[in-house]
Image (cartoon, rainbow, N blue to C red):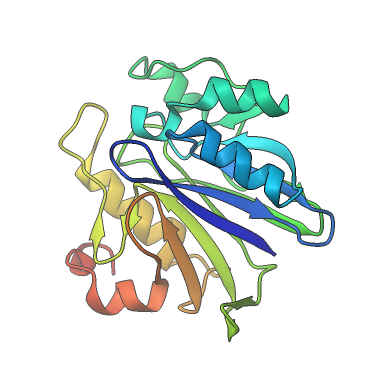
Length: 210
Protein backbone atom coordinates (compact mmCIF):
# COMPACT_ATOMS: atom_id res chain seq x y z
CA UNK A 1 0.00 0.00 0.00
CA UNK A 2 1.00 3.58 -0.69
CA UNK A 3 -0.54 6.04 1.76
CA UNK A 4 0.76 9.58 2.14
CA UNK A 5 -0.99 12.32 4.11
CA UNK A 6 -0.09 15.90 3.23
CA UNK A 7 -1.51 18.74 5.33
CA UNK A 8 -2.24 21.52 2.84
CA UNK A 9 -3.88 24.91 2.53
CA UNK A 10 -4.83 27.57 5.09
CA UNK A 11 -7.27 25.33 6.98
CA UNK A 12 -4.94 22.35 7.35
CA UNK A 13 -6.76 20.00 5.00
CA UNK A 14 -5.58 16.41 4.74
CA UNK A 15 -4.73 15.57 1.15
CA UNK A 16 -4.17 11.84 0.67
CA UNK A 17 -2.16 9.97 -1.93
CA UNK A 18 -3.35 6.37 -1.86
CA UNK A 19 -2.78 3.32 -3.99
CA UNK A 20 -0.73 0.25 -4.82
CA UNK A 21 2.91 -0.23 -3.91
CA UNK A 22 3.07 -2.99 -6.55
CA UNK A 23 2.01 -0.97 -9.60
CA UNK A 24 2.76 2.51 -8.16
CA UNK A 25 -0.70 3.59 -9.30
CA UNK A 26 -2.34 6.07 -6.93
CA UNK A 27 -5.32 8.37 -6.60
CA UNK A 28 -5.15 11.85 -5.07
CA UNK A 29 -7.89 12.81 -2.59
CA UNK A 30 -8.76 16.46 -1.84
CA UNK A 31 -5.91 18.65 -3.15
CA UNK A 32 -6.86 21.65 -1.02
CA UNK A 33 -3.66 23.66 -1.42
CA UNK A 34 0.12 23.61 -1.79
CA UNK A 35 0.15 21.94 -5.19
CA UNK A 36 3.96 21.95 -5.35
CA UNK A 37 4.15 19.82 -2.21
CA UNK A 38 1.68 17.32 -3.68
CA UNK A 39 3.44 17.19 -7.04
CA UNK A 40 6.89 16.86 -5.48
CA UNK A 41 5.77 14.02 -3.22
CA UNK A 42 4.38 12.08 -6.17
CA UNK A 43 7.46 12.72 -8.30
CA UNK A 44 9.89 11.83 -5.51
CA UNK A 45 8.13 8.51 -4.90
CA UNK A 46 7.87 7.83 -8.65
CA UNK A 47 4.12 7.29 -8.41
CA UNK A 48 1.58 7.12 -11.25
CA UNK A 49 -1.60 9.10 -10.49
CA UNK A 50 -4.68 7.71 -12.23
CA UNK A 51 -7.43 9.84 -10.71
CA UNK A 52 -8.31 12.88 -8.65
CA UNK A 53 -11.07 12.24 -6.09
CA UNK A 54 -13.01 14.77 -4.04
CA UNK A 55 -14.87 14.00 -0.83
CA UNK A 56 -16.83 17.26 -1.26
CA UNK A 57 -16.71 20.69 -2.82
CA UNK A 58 -15.69 23.12 -0.07
CA UNK A 59 -12.84 25.40 -1.13
CA UNK A 60 -10.32 23.99 1.34
CA UNK A 61 -10.62 20.59 -0.34
CA UNK A 62 -10.63 21.65 -4.00
CA UNK A 63 -8.38 24.73 -4.23
CA UNK A 64 -5.68 23.08 -6.36
CA UNK A 65 -7.88 20.74 -8.41
CA UNK A 66 -7.12 22.45 -11.72
CA UNK A 67 -3.38 22.56 -11.11
CA UNK A 68 -3.13 18.89 -10.13
CA UNK A 69 -5.46 17.73 -12.89
CA UNK A 70 -3.42 19.59 -15.52
CA UNK A 71 -0.07 18.45 -14.12
CA UNK A 72 -0.86 14.73 -14.28
CA UNK A 73 -3.61 14.74 -16.95
CA UNK A 74 -5.93 12.64 -14.81
CA UNK A 75 -9.74 12.52 -14.53
CA UNK A 76 -11.60 14.47 -11.86
CA UNK A 77 -14.12 12.34 -9.96
CA UNK A 78 -16.73 13.26 -7.38
CA UNK A 79 -20.51 13.11 -6.73
CA UNK A 80 -22.90 14.78 -9.17
CA UNK A 81 -25.17 15.80 -6.30
CA UNK A 82 -22.40 18.13 -5.15
CA UNK A 83 -22.24 19.78 -8.58
CA UNK A 84 -26.02 19.93 -8.98
CA UNK A 85 -26.43 21.71 -5.63
CA UNK A 86 -24.97 24.86 -7.18
CA UNK A 87 -23.16 25.66 -3.95
CA UNK A 88 -19.60 25.10 -5.11
CA UNK A 89 -17.23 26.73 -7.57
CA UNK A 90 -16.07 23.55 -9.21
CA UNK A 91 -15.90 22.22 -12.74
CA UNK A 92 -17.84 19.22 -13.98
CA UNK A 93 -16.33 15.85 -13.20
CA UNK A 94 -14.85 13.63 -15.85
CA UNK A 95 -16.50 10.78 -14.00
CA UNK A 96 -19.39 11.02 -11.55
CA UNK A 97 -19.06 8.71 -8.56
CA UNK A 98 -22.04 6.83 -7.15
CA UNK A 99 -22.82 4.77 -4.09
CA UNK A 100 -21.34 1.26 -4.07
CA UNK A 101 -19.19 1.76 -7.17
CA UNK A 102 -15.53 0.72 -7.15
CA UNK A 103 -12.31 2.26 -8.37
CA UNK A 104 -9.47 -0.13 -9.08
CA UNK A 105 -6.01 1.19 -8.21
CA UNK A 106 -3.59 -1.51 -9.23
CA UNK A 107 -4.32 -4.46 -6.95
CA UNK A 108 -6.44 -2.36 -4.57
CA UNK A 109 -10.17 -1.72 -4.84
CA UNK A 110 -11.58 1.52 -3.41
CA UNK A 111 -15.33 1.56 -2.79
CA UNK A 112 -17.56 4.63 -2.94
CA UNK A 113 -20.07 5.67 -0.28
CA UNK A 114 -22.48 8.57 -0.64
CA UNK A 115 -22.43 10.15 2.82
CA UNK A 116 -24.32 13.48 2.70
CA UNK A 117 -24.76 15.73 5.70
CA UNK A 118 -21.73 18.01 5.72
CA UNK A 119 -22.68 18.83 2.13
CA UNK A 120 -25.30 17.43 -0.28
CA UNK A 121 -22.88 15.26 -2.24
CA UNK A 122 -20.26 14.31 0.30
CA UNK A 123 -18.49 11.03 -0.36
CA UNK A 124 -16.44 8.61 1.70
CA UNK A 125 -14.10 5.96 0.30
CA UNK A 126 -13.06 2.66 1.82
CA UNK A 127 -10.95 -0.40 1.05
CA UNK A 128 -10.80 -3.75 2.77
CA UNK A 129 -7.82 -4.76 0.64
CA UNK A 130 -5.47 -3.15 3.17
CA UNK A 131 -4.61 -5.42 6.10
CA UNK A 132 -1.90 -3.54 7.98
CA UNK A 133 -1.03 0.00 8.99
CA UNK A 134 2.17 0.95 10.78
CA UNK A 135 2.87 -2.76 11.27
CA UNK A 136 -0.46 -3.31 13.03
CA UNK A 137 -3.07 -5.68 11.61
CA UNK A 138 -6.25 -3.94 10.46
CA UNK A 139 -9.33 -4.90 8.43
CA UNK A 140 -9.29 -1.88 6.12
CA UNK A 141 -9.14 1.88 5.77
CA UNK A 142 -11.75 4.59 5.37
CA UNK A 143 -11.45 8.14 4.06
CA UNK A 144 -14.29 10.23 5.51
CA UNK A 145 -13.61 13.78 4.34
CA UNK A 146 -15.50 16.12 6.66
CA UNK A 147 -18.15 13.57 7.59
CA UNK A 148 -16.46 12.03 10.62
CA UNK A 149 -13.44 13.30 12.55
CA UNK A 150 -11.49 12.00 15.49
CA UNK A 151 -13.90 12.52 18.41
CA UNK A 152 -16.20 14.75 16.36
CA UNK A 153 -18.21 15.21 13.15
CA UNK A 154 -18.26 17.70 10.30
CA UNK A 155 -20.10 21.00 10.51
CA UNK A 156 -23.75 21.09 9.45
CA UNK A 157 -24.46 24.78 10.16
CA UNK A 158 -23.27 25.90 6.73
CA UNK A 159 -25.26 26.03 3.51
CA UNK A 160 -25.97 22.53 2.27
CA UNK A 161 -25.37 20.94 5.67
CA UNK A 162 -27.96 18.78 7.40
CA UNK A 163 -27.50 17.44 10.92
CA UNK A 164 -30.09 14.67 10.67
CA UNK A 165 -28.54 13.54 7.42
CA UNK A 166 -24.96 13.46 8.71
CA UNK A 167 -25.90 11.18 11.60
CA UNK A 168 -27.85 8.94 9.23
CA UNK A 169 -24.85 8.73 6.89
CA UNK A 170 -22.47 7.77 9.68
CA UNK A 171 -24.85 5.16 11.05
CA UNK A 172 -26.07 3.53 7.84
CA UNK A 173 -22.96 3.79 5.67
CA UNK A 174 -20.24 3.20 8.27
CA UNK A 175 -21.42 1.87 11.63
CA UNK A 176 -24.00 -0.57 10.21
CA UNK A 177 -22.03 -1.41 7.06
CA UNK A 178 -21.25 -5.16 7.22
CA UNK A 179 -18.03 -4.63 5.24
CA UNK A 180 -16.64 -2.04 7.68
CA UNK A 181 -15.50 -3.39 11.04
CA UNK A 182 -14.35 -1.77 14.26
CA UNK A 183 -10.82 -2.49 13.11
CA UNK A 184 -10.93 -0.01 10.21
CA UNK A 185 -8.61 2.99 10.37
CA UNK A 186 -10.35 6.30 9.59
CA UNK A 187 -8.49 9.02 7.72
CA UNK A 188 -10.54 12.23 7.97
CA UNK A 189 -10.34 15.49 6.06
CA UNK A 190 -8.74 17.32 8.98
CA UNK A 191 -6.75 16.36 12.07
CA UNK A 192 -5.42 12.92 12.91
CA UNK A 193 -6.41 9.35 12.14
CA UNK A 194 -8.72 7.31 14.34
CA UNK A 195 -10.64 4.02 14.09
CA UNK A 196 -14.25 2.94 13.93
CA UNK A 197 -13.82 1.33 17.34
CA UNK A 198 -12.50 4.54 18.89
CA UNK A 199 -15.34 6.62 17.48
CA UNK A 200 -17.92 4.21 18.83
CA UNK A 201 -16.35 4.60 22.25
CA UNK A 202 -15.26 8.23 22.39
CA UNK A 203 -16.92 10.39 19.73
CA UNK A 204 -18.76 13.30 21.34
CA UNK A 205 -21.79 12.64 19.12
CA UNK A 206 -21.81 8.83 19.28
CA UNK A 207 -25.25 8.58 20.90
CA UNK A 208 -26.75 10.04 17.71
CA UNK A 209 -25.28 7.46 15.33
CA UNK A 210 -24.98 4.26 17.36
